[in-house]
Length: 441
Ligand code: SF4
Ligand code: SF4
Image (cartoon, rainbow, N blue to C red; front, side):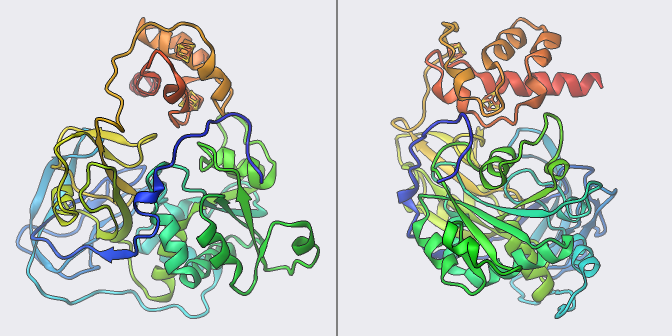
C-alpha cells in the first residue's frame, strides 16, 4: 500500500456509522444560508425580504472570479439577510428562509454530451466548491494556469469518525464515477486515480466491480486502457487525505512549498465534489445539499445524512436523538481539523462533512503544559516543519520567527498537536500567526 512520509496512526472510530445507510434530513422551519460558504468573496444576494423562492433557485450570485453562486435549499419565503456566527466563530451574512411546505424545484437544463467548457460553466452555475473542507470554487480549480496531466480523486477520508464519502462510494457508485469522468473530461486528462484508505474495503470492492475501473496492481496496469480509472489502495494513516500527501502517495510527486497541485501537473478533487458535478451536469441540480456524518459517542443515534445547506445543527442533533449527558465537546467537521463549537446555534454549509458530539472519554480536556522538546511533533509533520518553534514564537508574539519556521506552509492537519505529550495548542498558534500575517498584508 502506498503512503507518504510522516503522519501518525490515529484511531478512526468509523465503526459508529460505517454501515449506516444515507438518510434524508427532513424539512425544518428556518434555514440560514451563508453567503460565505467558499474561499473568496461572499456571494451577492439576488433576493429580498418577502420574496418567495423554490428549492434550487439562485439566491446569491458569485461576486468575483474566486466566489460561488448560492441556491435555496428549500421552498419558502425570504425573511431577510441576517448576521450569524459560523462554525469558526466569525460573523457572516446569511439569507434567512422560512420554509412554506411546497415541493417545487428549479433545475438547470440537463447536459447529455457536454463539451469541457460546458462542464466548467455548469460547475460555476451550480455553485460547486471543494467539499472536502477547503471550499475553493471548483470551476476556478479546473482552469489552472499550469498544464495538467493527472486527476486524483481524494477518497482517503482520513478524518476519524467521518463516513460520508465512504457511504457515497458504496451507495451511489456509478453516479460518483460519472462525476469523476466529467471532471477528467473538463480538464482533458486520461490519467485518473482514486486514492482510498485501506479501511474502506467495501467501497474499494464496489469501485472495482465497475466497468473501466482497475486496481493499482502490476497485472491490472499492464492491461490498462486509456480511459481506465485506477483505484490506489492507501495505507491508513493520518493525514493521508491532505492534497500534498495524497499526490505523493498516488503519483509520487512533491508539490513545492507554497505551490498548488497544478504546479506538478495535477488536480485533486474530493468524492463529494465529483458527485456534485454529476448531479449538476446530468440532472441540472445546483449544489444546495450534501452528505454529513453525525457521530461521536455523545450522539444518541449516529447517522449519515443528506442535509440541505443552512440547516441549523440543533435540528440535526434532534433528529439523531440528542446528545448524552457526558458530552463534553461539540465539533463541526472531524476531530483533527474541525472546529469546536460553543453551542448548536450554527447552520450547515457546503463544506461541512460532519458534526461530532464527543464524550469525556473521547475528547481531551487536559490543559497545555510547557514544551519538553521531545521532537515528536517534528517527526510526524508531513510538511517537515518544526511545529514546536512555530508554537513557541507565536506564544511570545514573535510572528516573524513563527513564519520563518513554516507557519504559513502548515495545512493545519493537527497531527503534531495530537502526538504532543504537553498538549501544546500548535494548530491554534499556526492559525493565529496566519491571521496576523493576513492582517499585516
Ligand atoms: S505543523 Fe501543520 S502540517 Fe505539520 S503536523 Fe502540525 S498541523 Fe500538520
Ligand atoms: S511534541 Fe510537544 S512537547 Fe514535544 S517538542 Fe513538540 S511541542 Fe514540544
